Image 1: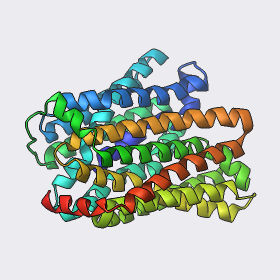
Image 2: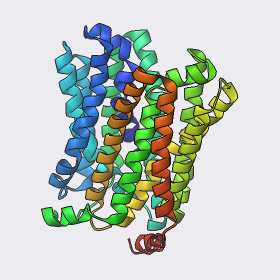
Image 3: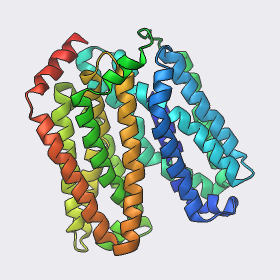
Image 4: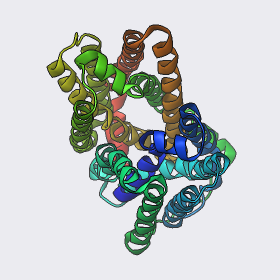
Length: 382
């Protein structure tokens, strides 16, 4: 499952890794390649809830296999795409599977272990997310440089195919409850704890992607680093993210709410440090490490809370969480782009700090509420 999350995240961020080669090869401008990211996020966000509800009665093993199979087919189509339109269609096909996959993966990982180890199991599956940032995107860029963008896309599709075979051989099946009615599905989405987590996620992810989408100009403005220096700062961010997933998994088994609140606070601290870096390489590197450590662990912590908040409808709860994450990605990128064009890097960082602060404040309220006791009792009964 970690391999599957690695392939999905690397596929989602593929246009970032292949911006110039795709632009040249498909004869379109960079903004059109950027649209491949935006359109993917929009479709994944719009379809996550309805497709998750439609597939609620399907056993988890064949559902995950189907999602990875769709990714593999979409990559094969993208590798031979003769035009921008075909590439866009291939991306949107993968986006349909994206929302469903992320809606069920945490539940499946948690079901493989004892309830008190659910956080660490989720972290193990989500480790592929962090590894994609550390190795996936740079590897795709390197392969495209050596062999061209089509072989790079095809090899990622081959990784999807190998992952599909491994899942077929190793992933145990798990029965699911009877398909819920629309009314029960809708009731699950109205859980106060779930809505609070989704609000926190949306705000923090908007702040994160407003800044992270423009990581390069921020690092250049703060520390004067480009090229190899920028790559090393990204490596620090990604490596810290791997550690963050492990730490978040262990903390989430104690209290997902407190782990999530701590992660939000660290994201806020990192963004504040970047806004005050004043051309300091050391401050920029330390901030990047804190940023990666905190941000990659947040989905693990909050997914644990989501599963415990709505134990009778984990798929529905996770699907709403996925929607909010996609809204954060798209909204943050659009906000950052507008502010960067209008007022430059300082405005981007100020907006990122504001949204992260709002999310952190709500997370602290949720993490310190007496309801955290209910979280532990629910986990014990799961």
